[in-house]
Length: 196
Image (cartoon, rainbow, N blue to C red; front, side, top):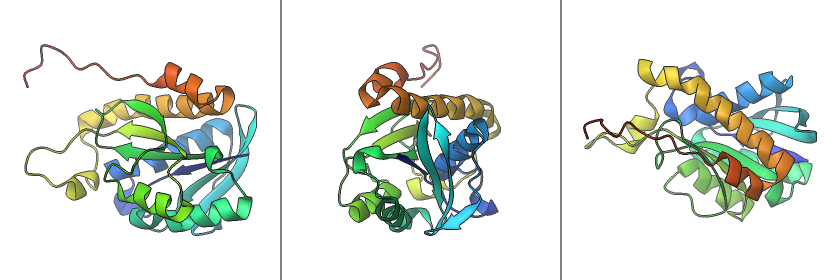
C-alpha cells in the first residue's frame, strides 16, 4: 500500500496559493481515479482507492503546512506504511513553474512542511514529487511569496503541471522510483530569447 500525502494549508483563503500545489494535485488525482478524500481522521482529509493497480491512501493534512509531520506521522503509524511507500507532493522554489521532479530522500531545502515530516517520520527517505513554483522576485520573502495566489498567466500553466504530477505519481507506483525519475523528471525550457 502507498500513502500519498499532498501538502498545503487548509481553508479557502489558501486554496489557489503556490504553497497549496500538493492539495491541488491530490484533488486532481482523486478525481481522475474516482477516489473520495472526504473522510476525516488523523488531522487529515483521507480516502482510499487504487492508482496504477495498487492500493493507495490519499491524504491532505488539515493542520497548517509547518505542522504537516504531525498528521503524516499519525497516518504512517496507523496504516503501518513503510517509509519507501510514502509519497509527499509539495511545492518547490528551486524549480520553474511547470517543472515536476521526483526525488527520494535528501534534506528539506528550507521547506518547513518537509522539515516537519522528516522530524516526525524520523527519516528523510520518502519519495517526493516536487512541483516548481519559481523563485520570488528580489527583496521578496519566500514566506509571503508562497502564500500568494497564482497570477493569471500562472493559472494557464497550472493544469499542465498538475497533470504531469499525477502522471509522475502513477509512474512511481507502476514502475518504481528510478524508472519514474528517468521518465518524468522533465524540466520546462524557458524561451532563450527572453530578456533576463
